[in-house]
Amino acid sequence: METWEFGRTVRRWRDRVAPEAVGVPVGPRRRAAGLRREELAALAGISADYLTRLEQGRATAPSAQVVEALARALRVSDSERDVLYRLAGHAAPGPDVVPSRVTASVHRVLDRLSHTPVVVYDASWTLVLANAPYNALLGDTTSWRGLERNAVWRNITRMPTRVVHSEREQAEHEARLVADLRLTASRYPADRALRRLIADLGAAGARFTELWNAEPPPAPDPSRRKTIDHPAVGLITLDCDTLFVALDDLRISVYTAEPGTEDAARLDLAIVLGTQSLTP
Image (cartoon, rainbow, N blue to C red; front, side, top):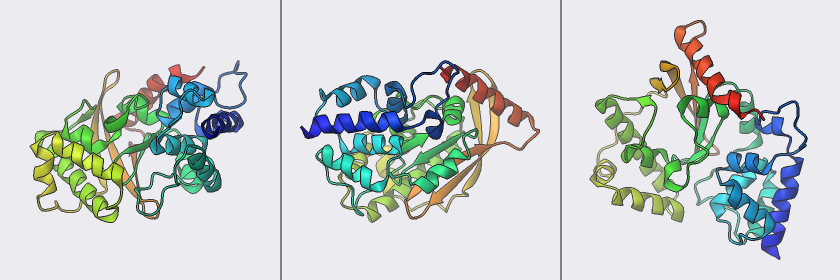
């Protein structure tokens, strides 16, 4: 009964979310007032098939990560978020767990950057959300699952990326990520998901263990230039500013170009090419 009620609740709350309020493009012939199932699935980073099974009660054990992702995508209140956790059979996260909650105030900031590439990570550098311009610029993140969503994992294992780094720049980037993850581990020693991530990283190769045991690198400049090799537009050099939301322990990276430059024109073109096909 609880699992069925979980799915029914998700379906009811999905119907009440205006697509424009969560950055989903709306075409002139759209009939659905709320979010379509595939749209919510994409926002939450889960498959549409799994969401269908959840809503129909055929999937009976959503993980806490899935519940959090759905609560975030639906933009529910704190009390409603706790309801979803209870219906799924979980206790709501406490202060000893890495938070991935995006508050209403942070959502308002992100909404005002809806035409700018923005990505949000939690303190373990696990992707919380990426907006449509970010996906257009750096590649679609909606199909990423599990460890694929973690920036430390993606860098340590050298997964494909459109960011152009020299070997030295890549090594320095990895060192900074691992050093920040080590600080996160000291703040959330009881977080089991974080411990699993660290164990998986250690098992992936000696590089992570070497960095984990090394002296931390100098504090990074939160504003860095990054070059993106876009498949349709070519090289784009941008400012990448990483903002820290202290109370929620989030990292928000924003990609911009100086107005009137060739990089700004290429960025605009990359966003148009990547997002125009998303409008139904």
